[in-house]
Amino acid sequence: MRMYDIILKKRRGEELKTAEINFFVEGYTKGGIQDYQASALLMAIFFQKMNKRETSDLTMAMVRSGDQLNLNKINGVKVDKHSTGGVGDSVSLVLAPMVAACGVPVAKMSGRGLGHTGGTIDKLEAFKGFSVDLSEKQFIKNVNEIGIALAAQTGKLVPADKKLYALRDVTATVDNMSLIASSIMSKKIASGADAIVLDVKVGDGAFMKTFEDAKALAEEMVSIGKNVGRDTVAVISDMDQPLGFAIGNSLEVIEAINTLKGNGPKDLMELVLTLGSNMLILGKKVENEEEGRKLLLQVIKDGSALEKLRSFVKAQGGDVSYIDNTELFPKAKYKIEVKAKKAGVISKIHAEAVGIIAMQLGAGRETQESSIDLCVGIIFNRKRGDKVNKEEILAIVYANNEEKGNLAAENLLNEIIISNSYEEKIPIIYGVIK
Ligand code: URA
Image (tube, rainbow, N blue to C red; front, side, top):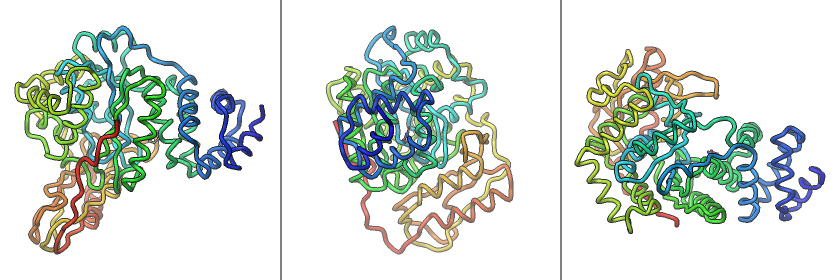
């Protein structure tokens, strides 16, 4: 088999055989196939696309490129959740303890933030002492004993994705449906979950800018999951404005703690209930969404979800006194108010631009090697559809560098659009693909 022939075949729009896809993924991971040929094939796939069978084959070839976690020693159906990436997305911090408190084991692999989107591991490290450095044995023990554990994805899991993602990033081939779907699903499948709930974001701050694209991606991933025997459900949710009110690592953790105490933002809560009830269905805990929602609201009300967060943070070395007193989280030096220049109604908050502003403040990474500042970020006081008066505080920028903070506040004002009226009805949940 020659890589040249595989590239030519895809360039002509023909369907690749399983053996050809395996040859490419194996050869590229091991170093026998060079970047220039892999780039050419990625571009051919970008233009000619892959069908569902080819995408499933690509996914499974990537899964086989490295280690696969065996979670059989964990009792019950293991359900994982994955978001395609958003701004202010603290869902996992709220959802994981809630689902665990309902009795469905949560064995979660998470990533760090990159670009304008955040990552759960960075956020959890806002708890002093928290570590994701667990051995496989300890990880399994924690899930069996307290119902929840979270680990960082190691480099040994899906090395093919690591190499291919880096190559896609520099060859303008990231935003292809089959390449995104196989990248996400290979990591979830290799992480050993029995069932997967996906949060596919749509809008300004998401990879998928339109509902049609988000739906196609959701369908593609659900189909891959089913093809390989993992029950998969995708929730399509709004990322046209940041989720909740907080953006930034410790700011989002505080928002998550408040949500578990029963004081969560409406949009965050609605998304958590939709994803959570689907996780409980897949985990065979409830029959339908309505039952799931009831149970999830119950574990907030009786404090057991907050208690689960406490056990989880403690088991991974974190200081749990931060949960009772969120004032203990380190504070940014400067708080800069962003005030409305005119009265009206907020018609848009550009999520991607806001994510970039937060990243430039230090809340996120521009490259994988950048370090982050856990206490900086943005808290919104108002969101899309809210009426505002002139000079009203729209948001507060938290910064540790005054100059950066002032620049962020100035830029943020340009990303919050105030109009005379606002008629659009953007839902929090667009739909659920099963
Ligand atoms: N997230 C991933 O893990 N991979 C992609 O290709 C896009 C988003």
